[in-house]
Length: 361
Length: 266
Image 1 (cartoon, rainbow over the protein chains, first blue to last red):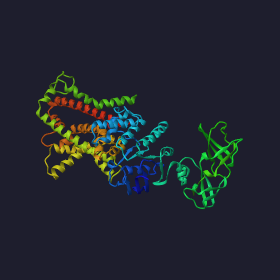
Image 2: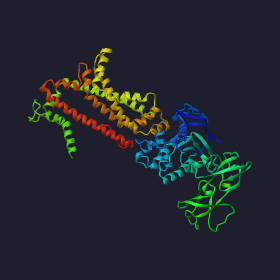
Image 3: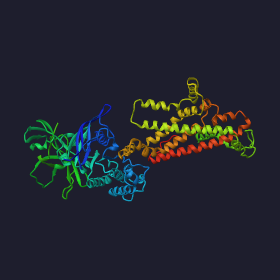
Image 4: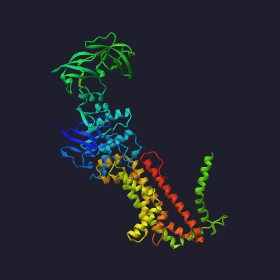
């Protein structure tokens, strides 16, 4: 693999606060990489370390084979889109976008054309003479993108770039960012606390908790094979049940509280487990409610509907099952002929051993 | 209702004497008393033909401009440093700089006089007044500039550096233009403070006095009183104009930074 950024043993202390605890990470050329985590997990600190705004207390960082120690932000092959966009309010849109070209030896005409191309790329052709302060949030975001990309950096750093936008605009910008990244082929590193955003946009995601990387994987692996309870509960929704391993090997025998005994392949315990008490995770969409008249060859368990949350296209049911501590959350598509059940309705829940994730602890 | 009446009465009591300045400045009589004698611009004319006054005005302008520039430059440095997360002794240093705000001017004047004349054995002159005026103007400059800096998104400077500028380049190209209204405001306020400051100037001026000191000297000659009134009228007008510009600039700065006005300084 074509590696571009290599972080080795990065530690960062703010006084007594240990913000980054020995981060090892390799980011590839041309990938869309996300740093995902709750606020305060160190993801922004890590991004700012790559940008050169923070010096690691310990550890090495190299970009494209070059050691970045004592290389200031203005000499690194990285550019950043700030959370606040940091659009210069005293300059026009074109002056903002062309700001990075001030030290460029090219002629004025060439620079003007470069600014025009950059604005066109982000869909703001013709906006050059406007005042930056007269733009909407989404437009500012585009100006910030054009301004960072005009320098053709090796890495584009995005610090929660979509968090200030409303839902519709955010979804639109997600798609545009993916398209833009494929178009320019530059490595994007996105910092976000929004797991959905990370899943939608990234080639690979590093989930961070308290200054450490909890899991590094592609979106599907991260969703289907989380290595810990922490990762599993941060990414999407997950039911957690008590379980007990009775036999280990290529196929693991588990006793799941409320559901019964089953065998699952070892790859469904991606974080590794040991014999004894474990946690069993099940995604809501891998469970199903068996309606009147429907049959299944999968395993079924009886339950009572405890709560119903209607989403339009989906309905989320909380179903109480004997022997399971918390009601199981089940998401069902609202297909034709499937009435929304009432609270208190007796129902049957279909489950499948193939969708279980075995987690330590 | 009664409260409003008291408030109005209070304001009249405070500001009526100032209104008397222009009235008697244009009064054709050497005695400051009603009834008024008639309209004249004689006193303003006399201002132009008094060389000692010109000398005093020149001194005052030199002092006020120098103090304003030096205090603002130092104020920019201090306010910028004050924006930093922290540095050793930050609280103490900023508190120390703001101290002259609550220090009686007479104390500043006397202690500087002692230090300069007795301890250092240096002659008094405009520079000694500039020194002291910088000291008393600094807190005001910092108060104004702090507002300008506080309204600044920290990412702005970082963005400029990210786009290839050095620390200085980022400050010059981004921070400075954004705080420019605050700088103008700071210059004008310290200019005004220095221009009509009396106590320090009185203690520390050498042979040639500043304008306020010169005015005070004139008061000993009753026949000169209308001239003082004329001079005072000009000074009041000038102060109002300068402070209005300063406040306008401060508000413009806030607007530019996209902030709500939080009361302000004036």
